[in-house]
Image (cartoon, rainbow, N blue to C red; front, top):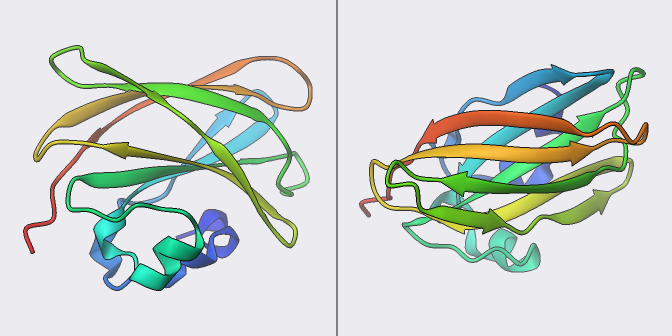
Length: 144
């Protein structure tokens, strides 16, 4: 599933591969922004605990990674929101994670079953030129 999965070992340890939506990549200016939404209920408990992620059937996290022209991860300012179809807005609180050369940004959030969330992520890469990543994702609760 691309560069992001190599950068995020905890995703590789998911119990079921269907827990994640396909990784996406967008070119924003000179930067490749990789992003993926992962349901937390499919993380093994020890992996979630080690990474400070709260597991739950109605919880997920968004992972963002910004790669420079050389394909290497770069530092960026990342902030954003999710908005459901009722126009309820949730502010996403991203935290930077570094593992070796990897650098990515995680934000946890809650959702309802079969809700469509629209994400608006503001990214300021090293060149200081703000970029916006916008996408939507259908969310499902784990029925276990």
